[in-house]
Length: 248
Image (tube, rainbow, N blue to C red):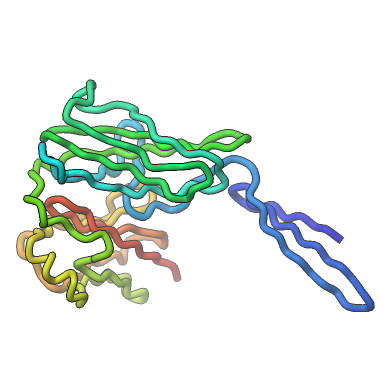
């Protein structure tokens, strides 16, 4: 006997049951069908086409060391992904260098952005497609009015300066300086400017400016609803991203 159960995002569960010599044997197969879709964002935060939502900030430099690789939400159930420019300031794209990194049947979806001057902004669209159609997401990038530091001061991609945890009963977010010794040396050359907590739609839930760097920060989210949130630690030339899930 073969049964089919449909779920969201085109996921189909096929269940085959075979009875042999009085014994039942079951085989389950999961198949993605229908339109492509995107997983939850992890690094770069998606927005709307007019940037009425989250903007991903970075420093600017006319030198070769200002490129930031932003990882977008993973496309799923797709055969091809692409990046295109929607609009920019200035409209000619002067002083902005970008390049999308995507390939057919590859879940990695990233874009490199380099601002060679201040007061620059660009909105990019990533499209995931298959034979049934396509799905799109928009990402906004802009300078943060800060020049990039000299070479040698870039944060390692596998190093976080802070560890983030959620106290589920009190809904308190604890942001504590990492005990990772590799991070401590790098953190001396990085200035934490702000802590921002946003929901999965890019809405700002809590934001704090950092004047004096501390080893421990506590943020109250007792008024926030149960959902997935992203904690963005904004440095001069880097955004450290953490994800927390608030469910009872």
